[in-house]
Image (cartoon, rainbow, N blue to C red; front, side, top):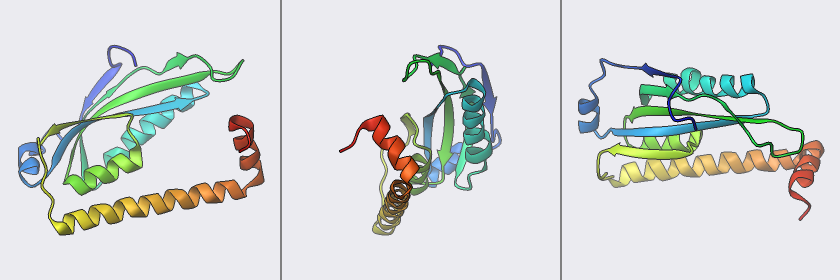
Length: 164
């Protein structure tokens, strides 16, 4: 990641963050990363994730986005190119459940919970959170199983990681 962002953009400046926190909200910084074989596609993927998907979340409010330059990395394969970039995204989630939900869906490379310093969940909230995690695990496992049924994807996987 570059030392300085190439731009910073504020969102939801009129949002009562203290009020959200008082209602059980979570204030955090998420570091969303992207990698790609082409500079433009890596840039577009990162921007789409943050500005097209995250910005439209119902239970997550963006507060600030710092975009860092897409950098060329050492290639994983000879002759190939790999580009990577990071967006630092400050958010406030409605509650712990929606915060964890966003973490699972966006898979940030790092998370910094800024406030609150502790969270209490009642049994209904815990149940909803565990049900969400279970749903995601099931969905991802079904996607992985479906991918292995495709002979071309299976061949590529075996080529990349070897047969087991």
